[in-house]
Amino acid sequence: MLVVEPERAAAMADERGRRERGVKGRLIAVVLTALLPAVAMLGYNEFLSRQQRRLEIHRVAAQTTRQTASEVEHILDGTRNLLAAVSAIPAVVDEGGQPCIDGLKRIIDRMASINSVIVLDTDGKLVCDSNGREKGTDFSDRPYFAAARAGGAFAVGGYTISRPSGLKVLPVAIAMEKDGVLRGFIVAGIRLDWLQGRIEERGLLPGGTVTIADRDGIILVRNPHPEAFVGTRLIDDSMPLVRKRSAGTREMTGRDGVARIIGYEPVLSEAMPLFVAAGIAKEEGFASIDQASIAGVAIIAVGALLAIAAALLVGNRFLIRPIAQIVDTLERWRAGDETARTRLRGRHGEIGLVGATIDSMLEELDERRRVAEAAETARNLLVRELSHRVKNTFSVVQAIARQTFGRRDAAEYESFSQRLGALAGAYDILVSGQWQSGDIREVVVRALRPHRNDNDDHIALHGDPCRLPAQAVLSLSLVVHELATNATKYGALSHPDGRIDVTWRHDGAGVAFSWIEHCGKPLTSPARQGFGSRLIRSAFPGEYAPEAKSVFEPTGLVFTLHFRLDVAE
Image 1 (cartoon, helix red, strand yellow):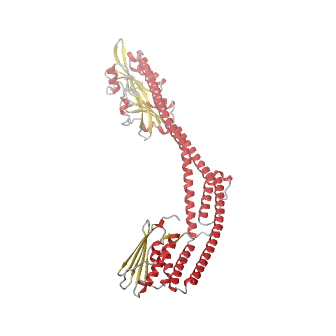
Image 2 (image 1 turned 120 degrees about the vertical axis):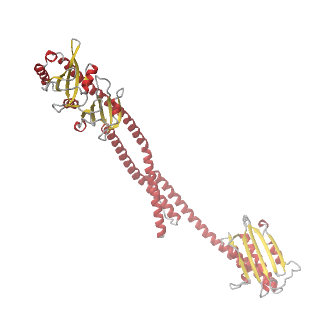
Image 3 (image 1 turned 60 degrees about the vertical axis):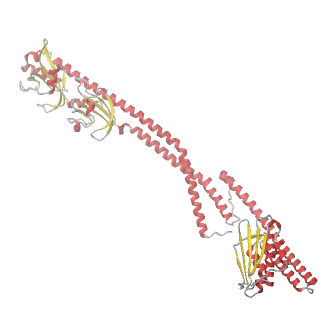
């Protein structure tokens, strides 16, 4: 069982956590993407519903305004008819005095909407009063009197506080004629508290308001909260609406800070000189839409949470854990745990099938590895046996050479034996490298071993690691051996102060090798070329494109060799 280092185990756990978080994030993104059409549809429906609701509120506000204005106009018409009937009573027109007062009182007793009825002469002086005020009181300063005398017909005043009663009234006046001659004016005060009651009886929509104001913008009736508004002026934004040429609707914020959609009827004529507006609070008007929107958002949010939870649950069961198990298995197998398996089956869905396939692949790779290891063991055994036999062959060849010419020419035998030893050393390098390649430094060191010890500073080696193919190992080993043998006999190694610099470098296309001797004494070029020199020049096969050059400088031999490496073995 493979034991994983704590640091690596922690790193693997962190990586596993990042992968799981990444998969979960992508699952959530997929769920949210799937919900986008629903969100878009909700948004479109929300926009469409609000547009339709806004149009509906505008329509309802305009309709409520028209109904209210129609009722107010009906009340004014009724009051005008009442005053016209009063103007036909003889006691009012001709007699005056107590009969006039009594007649007006009987009318007032039956009319809850009227505060008082008075009769004025053409100069605005009081003739008689239903409340019994002193005759001769001057009313000529009242705007409604000026309007009635100027128009000669029905006139409606503005917000007024009655002098005798202190009640808030809306005065109306009508000209009183007899035989085509203006005899005076009859004036009645419509009680604003009665008018407020009539408007309140109509009721209100949730968040709705109704406002009636005179031509100067003074509020006569306000539902709701009349106590806070009646007698005050409309806000500045509303004043331009009083003189509009036609009715309409608009959105605005009232004095109470509430945003409303209002319908309005401006002052269009002397017969209807009042401004009427009905508003609906946007918050109340859109309450049903807001509730539906909140419900829709809540449903989508709950649906999204449930979908995400389901996706994470299903994804964790069928995606995250199986994928993590597959990745963990592959990581363990790559780290050397050959027993690692996913143990997944079809119950984990398609990912389980992938895991089962990976297990089959790992089983097959494990079997191949065992077969390869067995083959490698057999090959190594064969290589060692072959190496043993080659060395035995070298020993036999060496023995034959000793018996053949050892006694006759000991020097020749020694030279042959050393060459054979160099070749055997090269074979040792190849055996250690599984007959594939060898490092150039090791080749040079083994070839120089008979001529150099560990503490010897006569031979200096310089060069970076470089792997040589098998044939190059054998060839370079023979070359270095011959160079060292010649240096021992004639060159730098034959003198105590001699020194050799061996250098190599890999120049991309091949290897540049140099052997430079410093003899410490003058050196002359040999008269003829011996076997060793010919061996040096022919050691490398032609496919290596060898280029060898020997120069005998006065200070010693300078030998350079260049050969290719990209040769198929």
